[in-house]
Length: 71
Image (cartoon, rainbow, N blue to C red; front, side, top):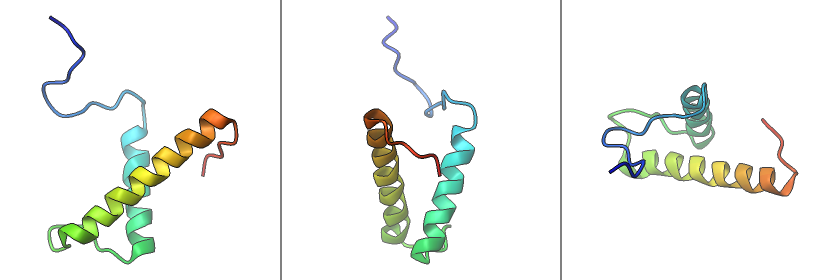
């Protein structure tokens, strides 16, 4: 039974998406003054992840509404 569920890690379906997300992650970390890595706190790393999510959702909403600008 194939229900399109991945059994391993998520796979990017858009070429270059992983690189774009990684770039966004480090740009946001820099804006927030967070040094990503094992020495960073969960809260600091989480703030970066939360901001990535906010920006991706906003970009999606902008794209759907026709006002998307690729930065």
